[in-house]
Image (cartoon, rainbow, N blue to C red):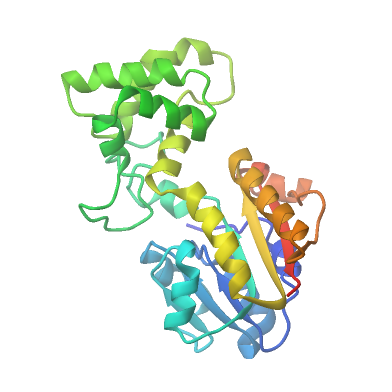
Length: 298
């Protein structure tokens, strides 16, 4: 499967990479952005790739032609960027890139329940092998209170039928455990299917998004990485963040504005950069992508 990196040129150009730079690709995924940076700059730069999914390392090494001396993989979430760099004995970096979209591999290959189009275990964890301590979507729908389930579906999925869906989830789990994606898809369809007739969006889209965000603490991790990431940047270093829905973009926009107001950073693009018509034709999944760029001042 070929992974197509979103806003590839715009994000890499936005990092203003130069010889000798150290770049953190905080969402390695399929390795597309890292491959493009190595293709353009070769061994003149160093790249540290982070991902909770161990398979990201193999995918990237296959793409770039095996293990390279200037590429280091760390099996970690980007919210721990400060610890990762400390362990590597790196004080500051020149650029940080985050592509917050779920990768094609997670949707189509991982088998962890990210897609409502495949019948898979209802996990939704970015980790390849979650432990008993790791939260899963299955735990949320089978054990959380109805009000809490409704709150995350509404808050993280912006689903206006969140109360109906949560009520149906709680009713259904009394009969049997909600174990797979198709179990949940049926419940959502029974709860709100009629309201989605004639709409282009699948009834399960927003609920699945909400559960994935909650399972992986995505929004709080994003807030953390912006704050920690700025501290990890050298003066003049750039941060490029690609978001895919309004909640993420709102967090990035507000955080960047706050850093600018404190005199810590410059916002490099007033309006988010979005895919061109050409990119939209070649990669329809890029349609909701937005890129924001920041430069550290001091």
